Image 1 (cartoon, rainbow, N blue to C red):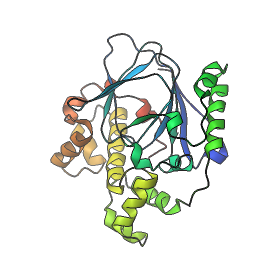
Image 2 (image 1 turned 90 degrees about the vertical axis):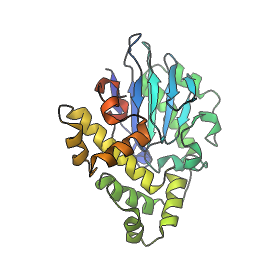
Image 3 (image 1 turned 30 degrees about the vertical axis):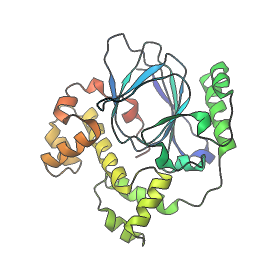
Length: 275
C-alpha cells in the first residue's frame, strides 16, 4: 500500500484534519472496498483511473469519479471499485472545518458528491488542470491549498460546537445528547441545529459514527479478538444494540461484513485525526 500524509499549514490546522495521498495499486478482480461514514467532509482529486462509488441501497447509484469533488458527510457505507492506476489526493476537513470555506450548510451535502466549482464561492475552472500539471505532489497540494486560502471566510466562532465535538470524541460517542446540551447551557434543538449547519450531522448521528469508527479501528488492529469483545470495548453494551447500530450504517451484520478485513478501505482508518 502506498499511503502518505502531509503537513498542514498552521493557519489551516483548525479547518483541515489531514492531507493525504493514496497510490495503492489494485489488481483486476480484487473486489470492492467498503468506505464507512467517518464524520468528515472531504475534497477529493482523482489523478489516476476513475474509480466507481456504489450505493448499497436497493436501486442505488453507481457513479464513476474522475473529476474533483466534495464528498459530504456519509450516513451510509458505500462500496468503492478501485483500479490499478489509483492516484487520489484528499483533503479531509475537521468536523466544522468545511464551513470556513463554503457558504453552503454542511447538511445540504450529506451523502452527495458535488463538483468542486459548485461548492466554493471563489471558483477556479482550471484547478483540475493545474493540479494535474504540477510536477510534484507538494506542488499539487500547494495548488489546492492556494485555492482553499482564496475561499477562506470570516465566520462566527464554532468554539461551542468544537467543545461539544471534543466531549463526544473523548467518550468515543458514548454520551447522552441532552446532558451534552445541558453542559453548554443550550437546548437540545439549538445544539442539533448548530451541528447540522456546521458539521452536517446531528450530535446523535456524529456520536454513533464516532463509536463506529472506534470499533473499526480496534477491529483492524486486533482482528484476532472476537467481535463481541471489541464491541464491549467500544461501549456497545449488548449484542443486539451493536448489531442494530452497525447495520444502520452498513446494511449487513458485522459478522457477515467483516469476514475479510482487507475489504475495509484503509484510508478511512489510517487518518483518524478527524474523530
